[in-house]
Amino acid sequence: MYIQIQSLLDEGIADIGRNTGLTPASDDYIYAGDMTKWRKLAYTLKARYYLHLSKAPGNTA
Image 1 (cartoon, rainbow, N blue to C red):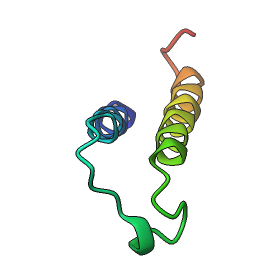
Image 2 (cartoon, rainbow, N blue to C red):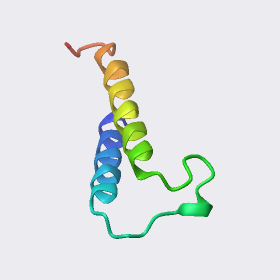
Image 3 (tube, helix red, strand yellow):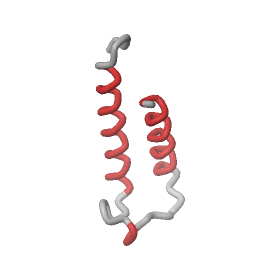
C-alpha cells in the first residue's frame, strides 16, 4: 500500500512541476492555489510514509 501511495505522490509532484498554467485558485480552500505549498505537502507526506515503512517488520532503514 505504501509503495502505491509513494507512486501517486510522485505523479502528483510531477504534475505540479509541469507548470501548465492551470491552478485551482479560488477552488483551493487549503493553499489558495499556491502550488509550492502543495509540492511541500507531497514531499512531507512521502517522508512520513517512508518513516512508517521503515518501522515495518522486515524493512531496514
